[in-house]
Image (cartoon, rainbow, N blue to C red; front, side, top):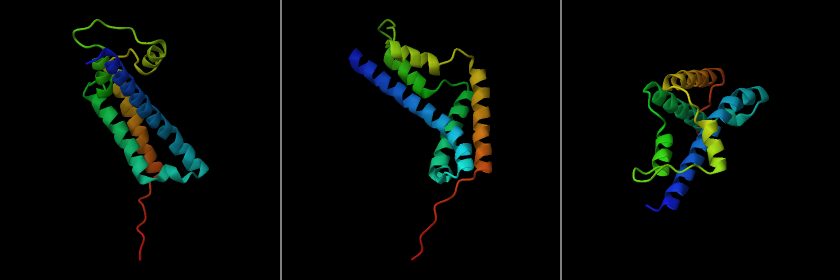
Amino acid sequence: MDPQYRSALADAVLLLHIGIILFNIFGLIAIPLGAWRGWRFVCVFWWRALHLAVLAVVAFQAVLQRVCFLTIWQANLLQPASEPAVPAPLIAGWVNRLIYWPLPLWAFAVLYIAVCLYALLLWWLVPPRLPRRKSF
């Protein structure tokens, strides 16, 4: 595969990863703030279920001491087995240092389990609402 194509795919995986991280952080902040401010969208069932499911997948991977599959995909795209490591562009390097912390996997497991438990607590404190069925 062409190295430029691999690099573009790796950048796309990194952007997806950043989007998921931002989605998770946004939900953890917006749900309690939205409950306090009366924002209806924080009780939308599908949004809350997706948020909790993504956090649960992340926590489950960490408990199994697995690196996130997006991290693996990006690394595989950036460094094929037959080629030497290439330094990341400046901005991509900054983003990588921001989201890839040099911690042991057990530390991530503790962090992600705590965040998932917080999301479960929010589910209980600010319960989502199922959509109403319209009657004829």
